[in-house]
Image 1: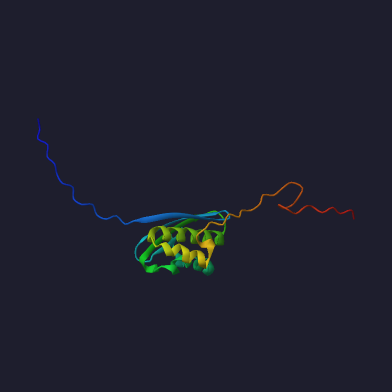
Image 2: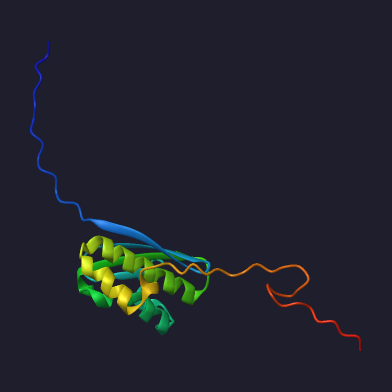
Length: 145
């Protein structure tokens, strides 16, 4: 029989830990991946500074004001909805991922005290249109003249 040789495995290198979380707002759904890094923020594959809407940029980076932003790399992919819906969904996703990654029990309390919608998805959805009307609640008016 052949001799069996045992070799010791070399210790594994520490893998960078990334946390993934999702957020929703209206029809928009965003998935954020947050890991320790150098402060790089990408939104839908592009650097955040290339996003044309300045208000949307501010909304997206708002959760990073509770931590040292240069310590984390953030990658967000959003689809559905409009620009502001995607921005608010991304904000929620980033906040959830930061809470999970940091392990700081007071971070969630700080964010909720600032704005509850930063941590919790907005459950409101658009009401579907009904028959006998142009919109969900409005009804056609009847005119005789």
